[in-house]
Length: 328
Image (cartoon, rainbow, N blue to C red):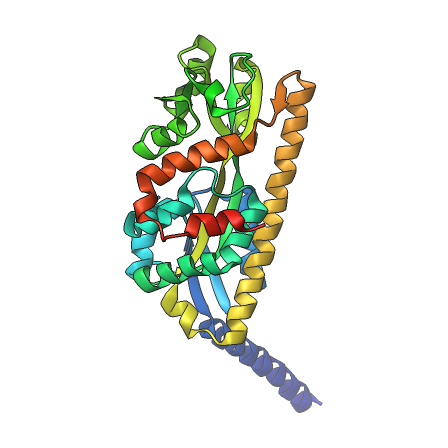
């Protein structure tokens, strides 16, 4: 009996040790994905990326670095290209710095809403831009990552229906040529003001208004010093999930399909959460007595797209804008 008991214990111990070795071997067999992003772990998008990481855990070891703790914002693309990073949440503007044609995908009034954006990336014209990024930069674009739409928020109680109504409006825009031109494409007089100083600038009348996602406007309490929200939705804010092309090409077709499906599911849920937050905030503003309404979107879109075509159109693939506009 003593011998049998010892044998039994030894067998249990051996099997347990073998299990540890097996688990270790499995872990070593996974591909590590070092992931970098600018947003913090408290962000809604972080929740989506965690769900994505959990869905691919059988094949990949998702290792996130939130809040630019691994690479500074704006350096992620180069880190991917140098094989120092595997996966990231990448700003389209960073891609356009190396591929001018991608500036089309950063222009105002390109996407009507998040659904139009997603359909564009899955369309033939979207796939052409994805291929362009892979061929020229060595990255694979997996899916867009939505984080709200920007709308105009004004202090003056002046009805805004078309860009002509924005004439003379001192609209706070972030510093930088891209943002200042965006303000001009709305018909306003863009005025650079730091985000931290914006509440005071609105309060004192240094600027007449600002543009931000409405959820951000509520968090910053801009509604306390403004009278109306004009739902221009002139920018559908998004980044893209991007992976090193070497890693993507090394996957088997079924792994790629599983990876893509996990990303699409996580980011669809992310979009739904942002849309729900926006709807909730708009109801709050209405109950607070603020004017909340949509202007003539077609008038704004026509005005803005002409400005962008005149300035950047020579960099864009011929007919790409028209093809994107035609997507329903």
